[in-house]
Image (spheres, rainbow, N blue to C red):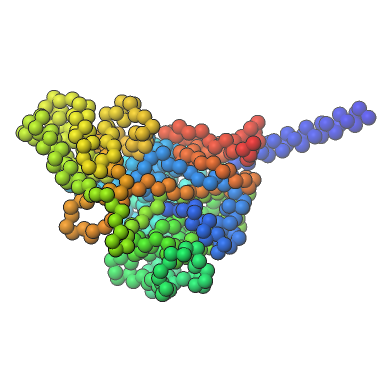
Length: 543
């Protein structure tokens, strides 16, 4: 009897050891990061009843779902959001605080990705990820695999493509605004044959464009999520290649997600993802914002139709991944970019604006004030950009003046302006004297491009740039939170809903933790505790 018990125990130990070994070898063969630009979690909820079972619902029912991710800075845009998600660091460490920077010497905006050392393939733009000063998930995967892993990114725009791909990726592709082809930069060396075929073959976008018309995908009675829709006539949008706005408009319609799927499915079919000794990575960006011609409208049939069609696109992508690699072998990471762009129009007679802030007048008055103190032999202020004042640092240095003192004097002056809620100085952020109030300015800016003074306006104040050529628009300063879910699915992850908020900087270190590689080099957050390895076993529980 004792011998039989010992034999049973020995067998159980062997089984447990084998199970534990299998758990230790459960690194995914493929990581697919699905990021939806301008995704709104409340819209998923509002339109939920119109979705099928294998798109949004599959993610929400089969994944580990966090109800919201939070960015630790304001003025989020596509560039700063994607840099944060894929580096695990805020703009003060990633170097990417926005899509554009301002060249005061040339008096023009330039892309944060602009790099004259590289030319474009299928685009006239010169881009590279050089301004991104921290590594990404894909970079760390390339380092760990000694280059054997394939890393690609596909997105509507260069910001989301390049910043989700990183420095060491095989390739990053986006749709060019002017020719509708999948473009890239010579910074990356990978240009698969099926991308060329897409651009030039009989199935290219140009060959199909005349047959593409965006009309409602649902019957009128299904567009019942919003009781505020006023347009009774069903919408219809067509895209003519010989017009300047063609591809700009198409990239804000559901067709951009279908084109992304067309290319992504080519990568899954011919890219041999999941067949290598090391994991591969594919970063895919979809679009779920307003149609370009409807930015001034809210609660439209178009936005509901965008989500309905995106649900079908997600279904197609997930089914293809399951067929080619297997969801059990794939880590799916699904989230949004944490912001939503729109313009506001108010009914006649309705006034919600408390006043106008004029940057040009502000700069002129501040310069006069500093001249009265330090002399009129030079201009002490360079200009205003993105709610920041830039001082003439060379003039200050030449005059042997203390920059921090001038910043504080300027801040005291600006605080007296009508509509100014708060002014932070660059010196306070740089020297570590920031607090809870100013932390969003620290996290959201980088010292290489940060202004000397950051101005926050009171709610209800509009910015008037005094540009007679610009169309008058109501731009109300708001601080609205956008609900953005975060989902991990596949690779043996058990379904669970976690009703708490997580930081956007926690996404990247969690993905690299599952991959069992180092986090990006500027990431300071720990992996999410629900996705941790305990004694070799991947645990998916918050308890």
